Image (cartoon, rainbow, N blue to C red; front, side, top):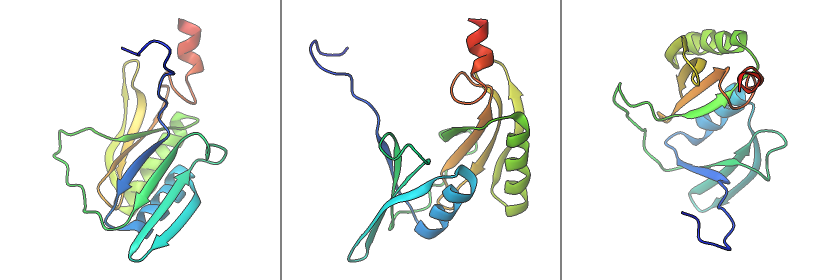
Length: 147
């Protein structure tokens, strides 16, 4: 319940304490199109902010070095979700990830609101979904027309 006369909080970032900072930066740049919008170093601690182009003031990933790999059991589906422009884009990402050894879930089609998706694992063990046809992001128009 939101307290009366209080604005609703808005999510602005997710902070990831990662094992392989530079490899994670490369992963999110290549697969998600995210860019570094801030970077600082304090002794051995490196902190990097990454965002989708144009969303630097809206939502970012904060990545910090010194973390540990995140081993997840096979039935743990926690993940970051990214919407793409088409089913073909999901397939292209999956093919690339398979060749690079980071494909976690083959492309699959599921009933509303899940859509068509595949899953990858980043260099620190975080799971990342790429989807088309969910009621968020590209492909959402088809669902909005049905409601």
